[in-house]
Image (cartoon, rainbow, N blue to C red; front, side):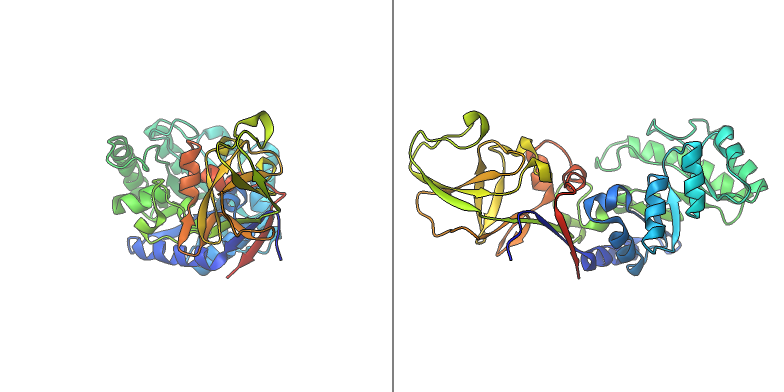
Length: 362
């Protein structure tokens, strides 16, 4: 049955991506899978379940509320909250039995003795974390003395920019701190790699990697997931609600940004920016119908788009439409959609709205 806006998510693809990523790691390295922002728009609980089935040993999120939602959803694995925490957030994270991030003495002192902490060293991202390697090591020592220390960690700013020098510079700053802490406190984990760093260099694997975008089969380098044997997990679907004939000069959509230059037919597809199909795709995207690409024409509205079917068409109301995914021999990747909007694939899947129905399947 046709649906106006349906996201199909293959949890099997997420599991297989995790298995493939796990197989690439250095022998000692664990796989931590990141399911923040509702699993990058794929569903957090479902993504976490699939990741654990695929070999993940830790699930990471950005907020305490996300950790609590995972616990409520039945996830009993080790959780790690990577983001900043208010006093209330800290209580919620600890109630969810999640590890937390600290980077100042004040944050460490606020954590109760039972808290498990990851000390963040800012090697060049410039956001959270201490920029001082002395402070990072001192915090690790203090946390270890209290029995709280789990890990020392950092985050790369340019791992997805192949060939840049900054990635290597950050790696060089982090390694001696990690080695020093691990020597003094055996069993401490060191982790640094996001998806891009995991795929780019085994030197960044340390004891654990934190893969996010790649577990969903999306390319952190914004090219083709096939390049890294990744399988896109999400596809976005709608249907043709109406087909109309247009004569030269007739227009469709707000602002009349498109008008027919020759006789043609337009399909109205009931999906729009209210569903996350962004207005920046106006006159700037393709969709798949009957396994063929057709251009989106006119302005994307909140609830509808229009698609040019050409002067002759057999397409009728009810035909299935794919906006992201495969139909027949054709496919449209989230990376293509992102490129058309001058953004990244993360934003495409995270931007799918709650109005879209999600179907999780094998």
